[in-house]
Amino acid sequence: MRRLDEPGRPVVVRLDGRDLELCDGGNLAAELLAAGIEPFRRTPVSGAPRNPFCMMGACFDCLVEIDGVTRQACMTEVAAGMTISRPGAVSETKND
Image (tube, rainbow, N blue to C red; front, side, top):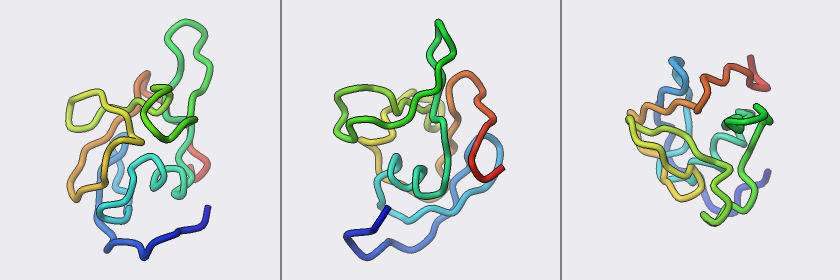
């Protein structure tokens, strides 16, 4: 991925119990993808992995829980101190 704008200052968020630095004010889905985080969730029936698809709020494939509320990552800006968890307690990441 290539940044189109100057990145914001790095801030710490908590993802699945571990600290992660993302750019303040960045698109949460894009920041998580750039950090190598995947999958975002698994489907409830088959357990198939899902990642952001449309990046404009139409598909709901990027659902994550943010501070206890299920939200679309692609429609959310990164803010310091966010606590993020992935539905289904997904533990796989590219960076693990």
